[in-house]
Length: 240
Image (cartoon, rainbow, N blue to C red; front, side, top):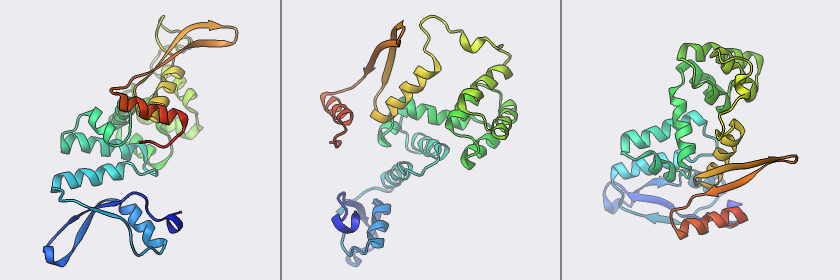
């Protein structure tokens, strides 16, 4: 606990105002600072840096996006701010918050939902899986379909079937797949693994047997340091 062990990672601050006053502004670590106060600590490790206003704002936004209790839509809005206000690419924004590029792109797509549907996602009436299933629909149809999903308490698979029905695809369409095209389940697993490892992951189904589908998983990395980090994550050890 923080009370027993203290804060392991220093809080990042920058000097503000008259240098003789010794005043500082927290750039990253606000939650750790509050937790230390609640634990009764009177001293915490601090790293002092002269950080420009724009960089300080970006760092504070990144820390806010990394909150565990953040709604997917709030995270998407934060990622959009990183790209729009600070000029980061989707890949740079994803790396800054510890997400894979594909996971960040999927979050950003949520901003294409109709506003009432975004409100339902924020309120918890539907979750991210439901929201992603609704994205192919026109915004007006998204609203009526989302209301039906919430009223009937449909799960994600049932929502996907409802969306296919609304699109007029037909009952058998969800079962048909172009040869070589990945199923929704495989795509969902790719996204979950990419998010967990913060790396691009591809799943390739090679053949089907009586015991199920067999294949391989490919994990992309950009350097040996990244590879070592991936190995640590797979072993369940601490990140570098």
